[in-house]
Image (cartoon, rainbow, N blue to C red; front, side, top):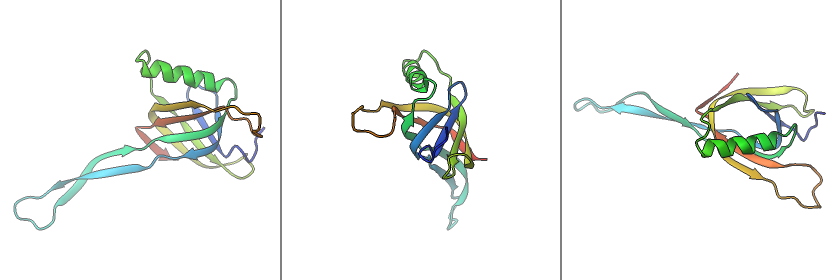
Length: 141
């Protein structure tokens, strides 16, 4: 059932959907190439390299055993047993948790972090893990 707590949804190909309370979107950084012929006062700039930072989900909910699946994927990827990269969609939901406000394509991401949440008897919301990955690219669609 949707709720205002689940403002962020991540759908990765081959995994159940992940609902999270907190998310950090990656930023993109572009480093243009510079070419300065002769004694030209200003360089010619052109398309250079770019990279994305990590996408991080915190306080994600375990729905359909997704925490076990992602933990297993993380272990297999870091051990070099599998090399498949993650692709999917990241959605920012409205206040009702029913309507996507923005949707991003996540392209060829590799896992960077998996952290089980600490369990205490005082929590009011169920959260089970945090997960991070670095995409090769992401696009607003």
